[in-house]
Amino acid sequence: MTRIKSGYRFSNCSNFSGLKRARLVSRTATIVALRGLLAINAVRETNLARLSPEKFEQLLKRYPDLMRVITLLIIKREKEGNRIAQGEPALRMTYTLLPTSSDLDLSGLADELAEELGAYGKTLVLTGDRFDQYLGGGKRSRDHADASIQPLVVAKLDQLEAENRYLVFVADAADTAWTQRVIGQADRLILVANAGDDPAPGELETRVKASSPETRTDLLLLHDADVTMPTGTDRWLDARTVHNHYHVRKGSRGHLGRMARRMSGHAIAVVLGGGAAKGYAEMGFYKAMLETETPYDYVGGASMGAIMGGQMALERTWEEFSNNAQRTADIGVMDRTLPIVAMTASDHVLQINKMSCGDVNIEDLWCPFFCVSTSLSTASLRVHQRGSMWRAIRASMSIPGVFVPVVNDGDVLVDGGIMDNFPVGIMQGLAESKRIIGVEVVPYRERLRHYDIDTSVSGWRVLVNRLNPFSKRLKTPTLVDTLMRTLEVNGVKTSRDQAELADLLIQPDTRGFPPTAYHKWQDLAARGYEASLEPLKAWKTKQDL
Image 1 (cartoon, rainbow, N blue to C red):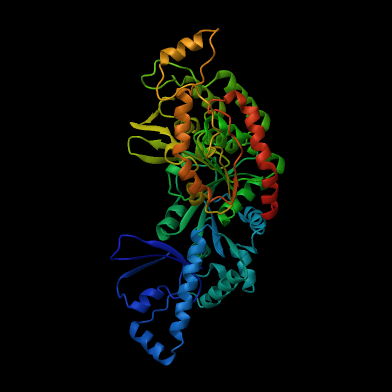
Image 2: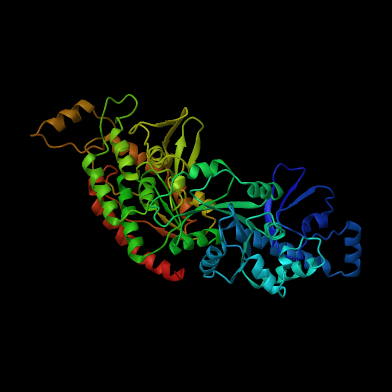
């Protein structure tokens, strides 16, 4: 498939689209004769046939049915574009694995990756030597593009691409004719490196990117079998621009399976909504995920969902998750202070975040993770995908007025739930998949309660009532509960819209639990488990997992 980047010069926008072989680049421009207004950049090696407006008019006169055929092609292309825009996997893709050092033999890795991709369609791995076998032997794959055998090479590559859903090319570790050819054939270039190597781009990588700047590039970092958690990923990402990065432990088919799902558009993504203590229902959802052995490839969340999602991305055991929840209940989140900056000093939530995440950076996680916060400085949503994990989550859960905001280089960050309490749309764009499981814990309607107040009440009266052991306790909403529920209600409309994007939506019944009921984590987790187990089993069967 030929991928193009096109844009009309009179507009300030551009769009990406995919074209199969023997397709018109711009049917619309051909019809309305927009001469000189369409800019086309070929992203991969392309054969181009040009048809002038005059020749087009002659063809229409000679073959009147041609306009009907073109119209049907336009409609079909629009349908294909809509399908891809809605997160459907590409019908065909070619990947080129490019080693960043000469000591990397990628043929075995490519074969294992192809086995995983084979779950979604016929897959073929081609090295230079293997391609030579299709041409009857010799070293014809190393012939340059102007060699006499070029038409046969192009025809054979076209045939193999038509016969397979996925082609995985393995480039040489040098700038050979085969390397140049498979770079030109790539819909996606994947740089492969040993994570312990020097992260600076080598001569071959630099030359390839200069010759193919439009080709989407990903990075695969290989780790030794004894590595518990990757480190130093930021050095690799700072040295180059990549769309995605993958961490794979050598010998781990689970990691290769995750990579295959991500790169082919079949990723399983989990989005966890905010909801203060009610978010512990998401902990029960995780227990159901573990029991049903449902794999996941992306995790994202807002506010309390960021905390719960962080534990999932760290691939905690159920025991570790439970221990963290109990320590949170023991420590408590409300270390009250003089309410000038916030109602709490927020030392407790700092301890909880560091205890839960450690000193891990988001980009070092085996499983990709993001969380969102709200910038009060720029009135915009921040999506955290790199940097300190505990700091990003701390920003995502900074309920205004309750917890101290997080300040990053002068940018004041508070709870992400203010702008997007259920970031399914963000996940859809990052994961490039429709297989999204969303867990929403905020009830659209709370249970009605009776309170002993009307339109005004003295705080002193409530305080005296609380201190007097012989008086009947006044039933009043607390300031913290009111602030937290206000934040929840603010996100309800957005959450409803986002929920429609989830392929599987799970909504545990958390009514009756106040937002501060962190000590009720076991009850809330049980609610989440009960609401998740059967839907997950059914969904997993539907997805043929």
